[in-house]
Length: 184
Image (tube, rainbow, N blue to C red):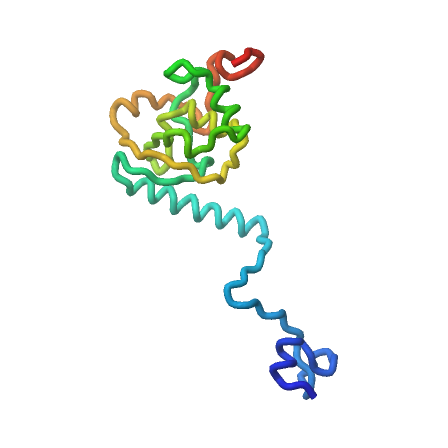
């Protein structure tokens, strides 16, 4: 008869069905070595719960940050603050250029200044709506963590807060700069 240790590790015994008698033991999973990590599939409900918890923690962290400090949030957490955007950045560059650079890997998120955000009514709103639109439309996963610069909900930000959809959508003003048929 194998020793107790051999039965547990190897699932040995007499091959019986785990009736509890001598020489039989229920089959056990092999033990993992210290430091060894096993991949585990999570049910979609567990994954959604884990993402929601991570989002909540990040949102709370941003809400506690002082103005001018940086933090990270998931791309999906950042809402648009305005109703519409132009397709050209303030320096005259078309949005399509940055979009193509990000999509092709020529630039990464670390090469671009952080999005300025403000926490209002428990939600994270962008003060850089064109940059946010570009990130969202360049193929980045919505659960990607992006660096943000925390701002203050001052009168100027409140005046620019024109979103009619609680920041979930934004309208493009024309096609200029977005790369739709023009070469940019």
